[in-house]
Amino acid sequence: MHKGMKDLEESLLRTDGIIEVHDARVPHSGRNSELYKRLVGGHKPHLLILNKSDLADPHYVNKSMEYIQIEQPNTQVVHTSLMSIDMKELTNLFGRLLQQIVESPRYTRRSSIEYNIVVCGIPNVGKSTFINKLRNLFANKASCERVGASPGVTRSMSEKVKISNRPKVFVRDTPGILEPRLKSANESFRLLLTNCIPIQQRELSDIIADYGLFLLNKYEQQRLYMKYCELDRPTDDILTVLTAIAKLKKCTQVYGNKRGYDLTGAALHFINEFNKGTFGHITLDQDILDAMEQEKLSDTNLFRASSGRIKKSI
Ligand SMILES: Nc1nc2c(ncn2[C@@H]2O[C@H](COP(=O)(O)OP(=O)(O)OP(=O)(O)O)[C@@H](O)[C@H]2O)c(=O)[nH]1
Image (tube, rainbow, N blue to C red; front, side):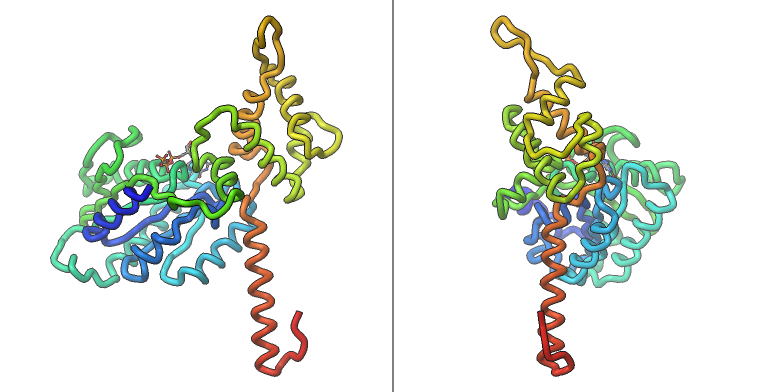
């Protein structure tokens, strides 16, 4: 991932704007703060797309945008579901970035007649989906020539796609640039649960499913998993959930000369359903956003107290 950042840093010299795609369910976890500090820093137009908002809690999607905007005032933050985005929304979204790019100073790139945009983000957040959608949107236009693979066909890494002739604009994908060290175990689990980090060992899936169940209970989202697993009350016992899924989905395996429930298979099934939204719209980072809100409130109270307008702070 260090290499990803280094490659991106080099390619930024030839870049006029950055589109970062991230999963709206984890607006805080896994975002590479170095990207903003080292690469964007107010010099390059930066659009952050919080994607997969169809799976996130709508209330927290708005909160996430508000907090990111406070931390990164030079970033334009939007949320969408690239899976179901329509042509009009995509045209608007891209138009906003293009306007920002064309209006920004280009420094060493002043003499270049073409505009280059890089799309970056951690794995599995929807970068390819975005590029393919753009390609499909612009491919039919006579003013636009195609570079690389055909529309809708999976493109190779770093393929350059021409999406506009006047001005000449190219979009390029970059490898995932996840932070080399994750900040906490919670953050790692959130990224594993949302598939932003691939689950390397199948055997770990029950621990990840257990973490998913923990979050569903913590955020009081029990109704849908209870219904799915046909349970009559919430539980914090992952074995109860996995056994119920294994029974319902007939996940079995032969152990020695006996057939038994395949709980690892059931755990993978649970994670898959979690990512399809079967257990509800969940923002995994909502505790972080709530804590930020508390902090903001107490800051406001401190400020008011020191200004003398309010005597008592919480
Ligand atoms: N529910 C939902 N799924 C989405 C959305 N956008 C993309 N996906 C799915 O997310 C998965 C990953 O999408 P990709 O476009 O391959 O993500 P990527 O960032 O290019 O992934 P890497 O190549 O691994 O870095 C795919 O299964 C997509 O169908 C969305 O808005 N909502």
